[in-house]
Length: 531
Image 1 (cartoon, rainbow, N blue to C red):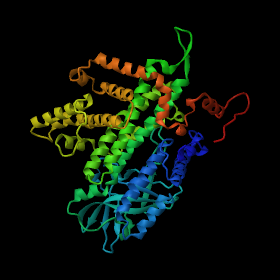
Image 2: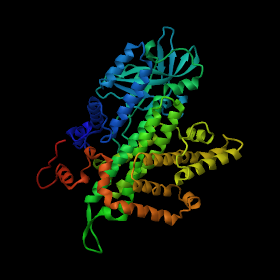
Image 3: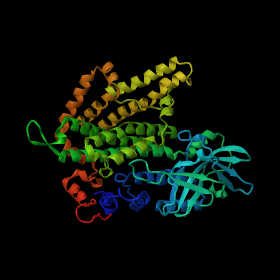
């Protein structure tokens, strides 16, 4: 069993938390992530807040600080304490009024005559949005991105290392307002942070004081860890799919109903309305899992540019999250009322996948760069395959439109092109995932089902250009899922997440144990289970 699987089965992760007050649930998330950090083997499947915390602390913050550690023992100390989770670090880039257009943020850091900086939020719309900056018992720092002002001149957006609080009280001039939790996702304490003329020492600036030759390039270089974050979000999406597929399939295999025609009990998994979404979801999950290995190997290639890495990560994440929220919502629906409860994981996974899908990424920019040939798209290894032809058609169709349009920034281009940008990256991703699955030994029936499960995303194209009528598309999906139905129990093992399941509906024994721990009302005084 994996190291973290034992942790996933411990009371820290298995005990129900739904009835705990919000503040206690947020603190529990920090307790869980510290337990994971001590193992140094991320357990990102059971509690989505863990993935968020680790992505912020290890990837965004420590990854950014590592670029400035040379000759800075103070930064080295911060990194050491952050690795052990003795302190927290937040990554404060976006603002209420500036999300994907973060290059226009308004928080300022003005150089003073004594070498210090004044960090200031000019208005409420410039408050740092989302990072959990409220005190929760652990001292916290933040990498604050602010516009550096020197002698009244804009030196571009630069990162500053700022202490937020001692775990209990905010530092002078810093205000943090706790936002409500995001629906059914695990709470992490999303906040609004603002700064009122906060004095920072000269050492707070990460990097050199000199004005960069290219302010825009300097900005993107300073936030380069966001690129790795884009990749990691896609990987978390696959983990969510594995968990969701396991819960819904295990429940469907054990849940039985009376067949109206035979008067014999049968598992609900045997109905086509159940096994088609289950198997098509598993097929996509296994193919995407194989693809993730290929994506990782290309991403860590030291010979490619940061722009190319960002393109790889964007294609990966965009493609994964085209499917993740949809699959998890559908799997939850197939579990009926059970799929609505947070304790069964599906609704929480769906809510968290929506948050991950929104965070980071630049779909529009890379889609347009693809159409104009500014980024390298890996050539299809099987150019005659249906998915390769689909990719080629999607790209060339939009290239033809751009060639005929004289104003690339005009209103007509915006209306016609922008809604199609996501589809460009998805078409590349689907073809690439198919090739990776073939090369990495995914079984042919699974790959064939993966392809059939994509038809409905562009049914008209496959009918017009692939010669597969709408009805034939449906027939192929049914045939390929039916052929795999007997393998359904075995496919659960391929997901390799059994040790991370907390949902009680996956077995009769777990469900009975769970119900016995619920608040119980009888003629006797109220009995409550211990949390």
